Length: 151
Image (cartoon, rainbow, N blue to C red):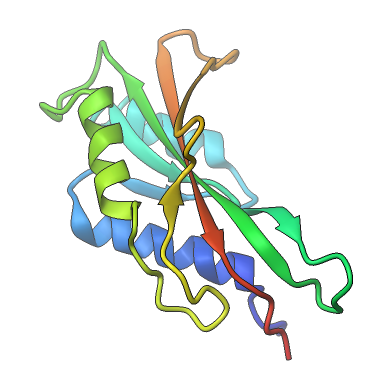
């Protein structure tokens, strides 16, 4: 079995930290039937959940083998169905809490030696869910400086 990539490890650690630090359901984005898991949490469950997206390289060192990631985008989506939200927490409160938890938090992974930080220009984005009109999605973007230490 292949070793998990540094990006997958980062995604898993962010998901585990969020799951342990607050009460909302946390889904870590993987291949498979994501829509049914989101539906279960948002449409028929509590009405609000967090979705940890795949980390994406934002920049690399162009002249080093690896690749060596200079910066990686870490995105967490707060997904709400306002009509079925029974958490007592609104989407803005949830997004602020995720921002507080992750901004300047260190994942303590060898490949990510620095803390995450909110995107300074556009930390949150309102996304439109074209499949389900009752959902509101706020995406929080953070950056992690790091490097690849693949063996």
